[in-house]
Length: 350
Ligand SMILES: Nc1ncnc2c1ncn2[C@@H]1O[C@H](COP(=O)(O)OP(=O)(O)OP(=O)(O)O)[C@@H](O)[C@H]1O
Ligand SMILES: [Mg+2]
Image 1 (cartoon, rainbow, N blue to C red):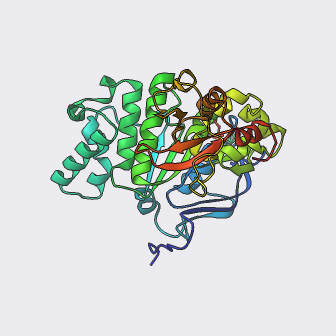
Image 2 (image 1 turned 60 degrees about the vertical axis):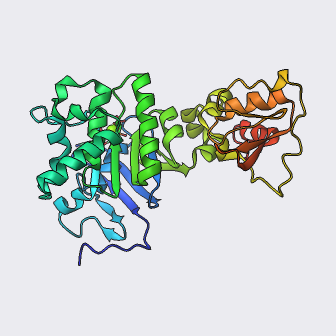
């Protein structure tokens, strides 16, 4: 059957995808090959017009490649019907695309309705999703015009998740929103993703957003894939001057502020607790960040601390490395000044 899925295949795979829009001079995409693993969040990053939206649309067949193919769980997306395909894929667009004449609950319940869910099951799902995106339950009866931009985006995300699709396509979903609301939405998405583990293709031209959200970032330039790498690898080993400039890889403090301790820490080791740890004075260990805990005379790092905080803590402690502990105080790794020094050299290997 066409609906069969191959669980050994990558969740999503682009094979030499090329797109030329009719009447356009050049190609919008050239020979793009990329694999996305199940549960992975891959960000498509690049300047305006580089082909991000086009690549996204080849997945739900809003655009058909002229060459190459797109496989979803091993099956060509062109194999079955477009409608069945789109029901497996949540789609969030920048303008949210909420229907103005439908309430929030009706907007969220749209796909379950199309799938002929019972009214009660749909209602429960709507409540569950409003809670998931942290909107009050009584927002269900509001109309989109009665929402702020950020709230409307949350409804857009809830709607995309309604029928519990394994895949999410998000095209600059937080583009038109002020910095604070955007920050909250990014946090909400990370939290939702840590629970639901969807396979997500997320488009942005905001580098900070990409570094913050992505498991891997795919950099596009003029229709070609330039580099695919983790945020840390991309910053420390940009493929060329274009990537380096795009990422602002020369701005050391900014990039450290966007990466987390967990990305760079070494394993806890042989159980010997961080040999270079300072036996510093009380004053030295007065942690500046609430996320740090003091154990005796020592400052610990948390895996979710950013590397800029970590550098500050390391310099204050005068230690060559610090232990990393999770919320229950379990030793999960250690971070050395040397590791930070290595990633701080643009183009230098971490
Ligand atoms: N329907 C279309 N017909 C003709 N050309 C198109 C069409 N849609 C997009 N293009 C062209 O294809 C190229 C890639 O467009 P695309 O929308 O994928 O870019 P993008 O990376 O999403 O840009 P942005 O960041 O501005 O959204 C651009 O040169 C664009 O002008
Ligand atoms: Mg676009």
